[in-house]
Image (cartoon, rainbow, N blue to C red):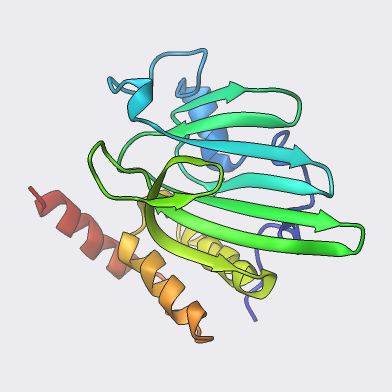
Length: 198
């Protein structure tokens, strides 16, 4: 059985993701990609896709599993707003618990859309995004997190993986089947296709 690299308790990270950001997030902060530093792109803020993250210990956690954050704004002690440039891919996990345990576990992998593109609405995501994966229930969410860990173990940022891979993971897990793992050869093929695209 594949063991996840990160530790979770039924969808909740064992550490506060606000205080312990992801590897990608740390790299962005050090390279000046977050708010308060140099602009991430020439695009206006209105073209970004915005995700509201919430942290209420052992109650509500909306957090980013991967993705290149282009801008970030702290709303209050429990909430912050992170933004993604059009075309970027990111994963958002939403978990809610009560006194008896976790009652909601969901994960969405989305592509941030450009102006005029169609999109699916997702709670806490404005305006929404192109849905590559959407699954609910801790057993399925855990398997998606494992699939993300496999990509990272290859030295590949999940945000750079082929979008078709996340659709494949969605389709297989939706019917209770095991998805095929991502491979370096598949990633190279995707990079060649992306480079050749107009």
